[in-house]
Image (tube, rainbow, N blue to C red):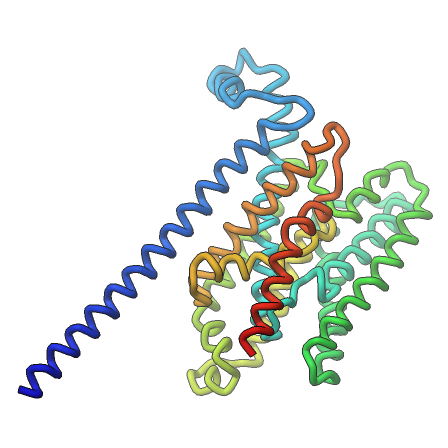
Length: 357
């Protein structure tokens, strides 16, 4: 009699586990479907809205019939579409960079902007732009990305040195903020005293802006971000083991030292790519991983990696659209918009962590 009741109980528990698993899968699938729909809507809104409104049907008609191409085609194809695609990809890259940094430091408020990594990239890019233009040397996108990557690595190196000396992770954040202030101050001096007429947009870039994107920029962005995202996907299982502790990861056969180096290089490259083309953008890298965890109810890297990319793309596209249109034709800094929407998310995440202690 006991064996029969025990078997029934086990069947019931198995059934409940299967139902819970199915519920989680439905929730995750629904979350991704929602993000994809929001991404498409944000993309359409971004290319159709601005100081001059262009109906999407007019653009599609000109796309089908080249003879009818006029102002709508020029505005969308040459200006807005490259910008929207660059914003989409770089927003996803920035969110993924933040997720990798939070994983590396085991800190929920780590991110390229807070740790000063974006500011380090900004400083070196500004120095390269001003110096090369002063010497009449032609600058290409590859040079800017290389300079941003070098700046990101130097800032990350300083943060790691601080982390080895500080036992409290809060002091690590303070160190990162100090790095950011120092780099931003030097960059402001460089921008202020730059006299070359070719760097008139440097001030807007230093505050964060996706303006002036070209199809050449988009091609470079796609290559860099695609390679970085693919490599991150390949590291999903080791990252999952690392999240459970370094000892557990080593027992599972993970080379923790190489994984940490990989996380540093990937996060630096992703944030450097964003800074090189759009300047520093605040709070996307910190807040998006928390939003993805909230809507998917999981921290598995295989879910978090694409989730962070999609969510980051949606939020950055939306904020860029607001930055362009709210005071059109005047454009405000996208960092001002992201701060308004995402700072409450960061504060909520900090309070939630404090409440779980």
